[in-house]
Image (cartoon, rainbow over all chains, first blue to last red; front, top):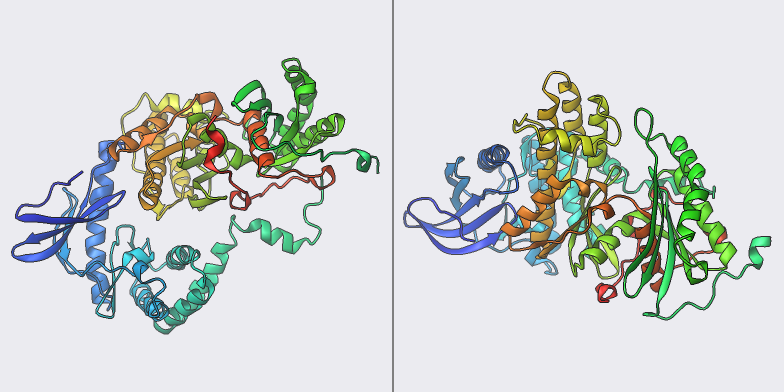
Length: 227
Length: 347
């Protein structure tokens, strides 16, 4: 399904068609741009659908800008239309960090990502969907994209969740434990004194619900011995 | 000591041979006994006794007492519909669930297994929901939204295991509905009443919409709903709860489908009985050229049939346990369970 594009935009190709948005590579006023369109969802009642798309579009655009001010590379925002759900932004290539998995550079990029995320958090922002697909690599720099689930927040909980999301997606890699350590190394170097609090919360999140059985087993050696 | 003398592990029947399993469900409010034969998949009996608290939510030990009081009678009814000699194996819900309730079902299943000298299989309740959904919907490679009073997960049954792609970070969606219904004086279970009242409203009250990647969170919505009870019309709150919570669930399910590139979607668990949720699922799938595979609504809720079916599934995967080791596992995670190959359903 092709999305409706802003006036003056010529679609070159669709880069990505996700559950929530369509991302098109376009030509606009003589330059190469990326148009992200949040499509309407028929399953949601119209009112809720518009509310969600509008607020996410506005929030994403302002996060992209503020992150840049905090020294985190993001695409330049050229134009925003909250009603139609459009963001027009600069094209920064399409090589994702995910595609670099297995490369000899991967570990150093993960460290760099740690520093980047630390800077983002220090500036009072969280990404909300931190996965290797949402990090682009261009000329040795990391560029964060897709702030659709991001927030302006200084809550330890949300910062830890950011890191937790990334770690969950690293979990499938063979050297995930090492990569997590490398990430935290970078994170500490830029998040400063807050890093320890985030790391502590990170451990706590891991112990909620999903690993309770493991914890119980540890605390009572006999386990739940009742039949 | 007497237990040891009973031969429980007969020679396992070969793959594909016909098996009849009697399954006992007792994780929460439902005490169920089901009998399934396979192949082809056939439900021989489905007995259910549902605990309804006089007030408030499920009280674990009262629910367990209800199960205990009903066990003998339910078994009698089940056995009146089948021939005892036909039973090849016995399964029970081993977890996750309420400990006191689980122990009642486990005790009955052990008794049947010992009495008949048949293998005992302890099954995971969540896996049973998923496998029941897969079997009835004939889905080959689906994303599964598992939603009930105690669980909210987006699951992909992949090669050999269940991958939990997303889940609630706090309370389950069924818990949200029940807890809201209780504070609004709608009784337990809240689902049917909330669904009925929601039909009478089209006015959306803004509630926290909390999606984080593929995870959801409902506790903020519950807090807000509880603060709005008696300030806003209850119909509007029911409508808004359903629209907001279900949109969140469908959104994360769609995200999982997009991420994995899959085009089959099924729902399992009691909240799946809500027709608005299924309608939204159908709509989401049709917009992305995928299919929502529905099945008879009575199998969304807890039942013994799914436990019997999962007993067959797990037995064919080589699982069975000795009575001495059949302790219940109230917090058994789905990710620790083996998932069967898709071929099991081609019958």
